[in-house]
Structures are given as C-alpha cells and as structure tokens.
Image (spheres, rainbow, N blue to C red):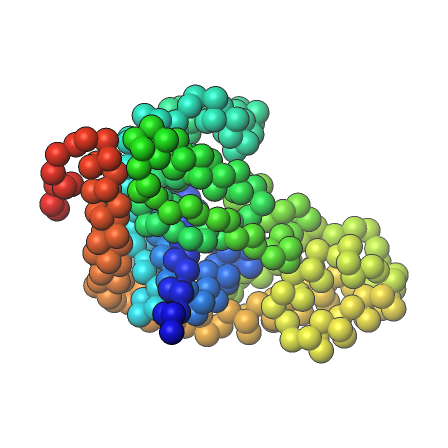
Amino acid sequence: MSSPSPAPRILSGIQPSGTLHLGNYFGAIRQHVELQEQGQAYYFIADYHALTTVQDRAAFSGFVRDVALDYLALGLDPGRAVLWRQSDVPEVCELTWLLSTVTGMGLLERAHSYKDKLAKGIRPRAGLFLYPVLMAADILAFRSDLVPVGKDQVQHIEMAQDMAESFHAAYKCQVFARPESRLASEAAVVPGTDGQKMSKSYGNTISLFSEGKPLKKQVMSMVTDSAGVDDAKDPEACTIFQLFRLVAAPEDVTEMAQRLSLGGYGYGDAKKALLAALNEYFGPARERRRELAADADVLEDVLRAGAAKARVVAREVLGAAREAVGMSGAPVQP
C-alpha cells in the first residue's frame, strides 16, 4: 500500500508597512487562517521587504509587533502554523545573493511592481529592484508548494520559478521545489471608503482593530453618491453595502439590499448598520488582541519558536545550494 502524499507546504509573507485593514483581512489573512487546516502553513512577517518603504525606526518596530498581534488575534494558531520574523532567518539573505548571481537583469526589469512604482515617482533604489530576488529566496528557502497571492503578485511566483530553473541549469543540480501560486477569491477585492480598492497608499482604509470614535469616523466618512433618503439605490453600486455583506449575517445582507432598492433608507442608516456589523464581527478578535498585547513575552516566544522551526528547513535548503555552487561547509551556526 502506498503511503499518503504529504500535506502541501503553504507559505506567505505579510509586510509590516502600516496598520492592517479590511482589505488585508478579506484579501489574505482570512485565507491564511483557513489554510492552516489544509497543509503545512508557514507565514513570515516580511520586515526586510518593508524596509523598501518604511524608514522610520519607531513606526517600523510597532508595525512588526502589530502584524504578529493581529494574526494571532484573528485565529492563527502557533500549534498548527509557523509564524516568524523574516529577519530572524538570515539564511534567506545568503540565498538571495546566490540567486542574484544567476538572475538576468531583463527578468527584474520586467517586474510589474517595479515599473508601477517608478511610474508613481518612487526612487529606483537597488532594494526595490532586487525585491523579486528576496521574495524568490523567501519562497524557495522553505521548499514551498503553494503561495497564496493576489493577481498582481502572480508574476513574482513565476519569477521565483525562473530563478530556481536558472540555478539548476547553471549548477546541474536539483535543489529547490517548484512553487505554484494560489489565487485568492474574487471576493478579496475590498472597496475602500472612497470606492477605490482599499489600500494604505490611497488613505481609504478601515482598520481591523479600530473601535469607538476612530472606527465611527472611518465608516461615517465613506463617500456616497447624491441619492437622497427616499431615492431607490443600486446595492451593487453602493460601497457601504459591499462592505456590509462581508461582515453581516446573510439575512441582514438581504434586508439591506431590499431597503436600498426600495428607497426610504438613507446612506446614513446603512453606515450605522455597517458600524454595528463591524463591531460584532471583530469584537471577539479585539478582545483576544488586548489579552495578547498585555504580555509581550508570549508574543516574542511565539516568533522566536517559529524562527527556530523555519531555520531548520532554510538551513537544509541553503546547505544544498552552497554545496551545489562548490562552497565548503554548512552555513555558519547562529
């Protein structure tokens, strides 16, 4: 009798570049939590990556801590998933250099994210240009099978595949597993308070753990059209409704859709309903987060334990890569 296939190794990174919001949750975090039931879940806080955009020491440190707290509060279980800081696994940086020596400039110059940032006037620093190589090292160092991403990140997974193939061709070896992308659902596109895709870059977010007056301000400031209370409204064209159906019970979603369509139900009423639904949906996670934040040692223990598990895998892969290029000895012990 053949033995069952091992569960796939699932890997994703989360950039600590700002306060996490509803778009982050429905676009990635919720899927990450669900996937810890379906395979070997490996999740890292991508602090090296964040340095390409965040260069404020105090803010940076806080963002890293907040990401860890948010994930644990929202259901990530350290007993089933590995969570660590990227910078606590230095093997990834050495592997980045090894991969960079076989990666063509043309491949990096074709990166959509790099070209988009240049078009927006962001300075073309070397770290931004080499971002895909570090991302490939993140993926390949853990022999990842599946990498959950949005459509805009699929190219980076393809680039990681290309870099692995280039390394194997150059050194006549087979060190890395071939990673495949796993697309998030279409529902992952979450509108912001202005109707555009929710993004820190646009300043149109609703923070996951806001509550009280700050949350009320974010919700009540949502942009709407000029339709009056008595006018019939199209629910599908209403940003408030689109967010409401992500967090409300199905029967409440149906009721709001009907009331908007019939008229006599204003946007102010819809915003109040959304505020109440957000408080109910995220209330338990907020309480868990407060408990976690009260004990800094617990959080640090989780991250260090995760890094120790991650390094076991990364050291093995890096050791094989070093041997392939002709370097003597294993990576230096920590």
